[in-house]
Image (cartoon, rainbow, N blue to C red):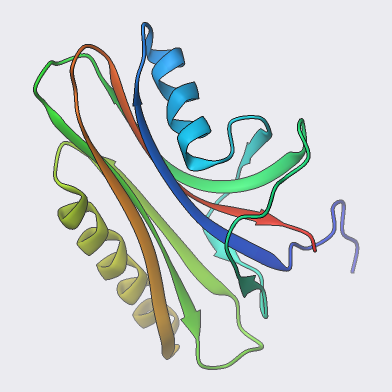
Amino acid sequence: MINILPIPNTVSLVAGSSEGETPLNAFDGALLKAGIGNVNLLKISSIMPPKAELVPLPKLPMGALVPTAYGCIISDNPGELIAAAVSIAIPKDEELCGLIMEYSGKCSKREAEERVREMAKIGFEMRGWEIKKIESISVEHEVEKIGCAFAAAALWYK
């Protein structure tokens, strides 16, 4: 098998929200609050490598390339409630991959988190696999001027 990049063996769930003067500044602020504002995110689809360990986010080197599955929403509608959530479904069979599901929308963090957890269950049902556990994280933000809600699964190499 040929790998262009090493397969990540560690995953961290992070979330943050922020106001900003521009949509990009709101996004940047949310990344900073989530702890991944000084790295380069590589957006990935929703697969957690087999046997990857779920751990708290360590201090990552500035400028690092970090594979990330994320949900993000930016709004400039004052008073609007926005939310983002990510879940990871871990299989009973450790040889199988896990599933990362992400969502963002105009809703509460509870609603966003319920949605990603349900999507993870459906993904496992589609594969005929059994779930060992589901972990999730979510954040909500009431927009003042320009707001962003961001939740992610960051994959990295120990």
